[in-house]
Amino acid sequence: MAVGLRALDERQDCRVLAVSRLFRTPPWGKTDQSHFFNACARVETTLAAEALLDVCLDIERGMKRERVERWGPRTLDIDILTYADLVQEAPKLDLPHPRMTGRGFVLLPLADFAADLLVEGWTIREWLSRADIQGIEVADQNVDWWRTA
Image (cartoon, rainbow, N blue to C red; front, side, top):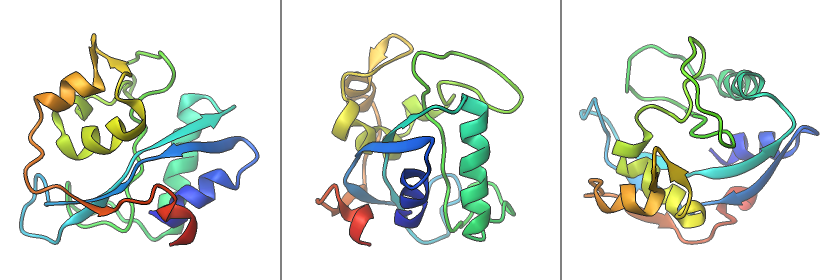
């Protein structure tokens, strides 16, 4: 995950502005696997949303990500949760991410730096107050974990 964030930050067209703490989360969807590590980042970019997605998918492939099994083990998973105020349903990319508001493992790290962000009429803080965060724990309190990992 740290390698993915650094890869984005090293690009001329992207800059990582904020990163959450690192969280260790129980598997979701397919529960017979190891825990995951989750974090969120705010990225400034000159790329269009779909072009940013292409960059993220290239980074995943560079880290040997293979999409074999839905919700299965993976080396890295980069999702675009929001892109400015863009709302779209498109074959390649739905924004905001259609399942983000129901996932504590997304909302908890996102709240570290964007608690007041409005998504579908509610703030991340409000969505988080309704989310299941059972079993999610902080793995690293230092928000610079990605720079040194």
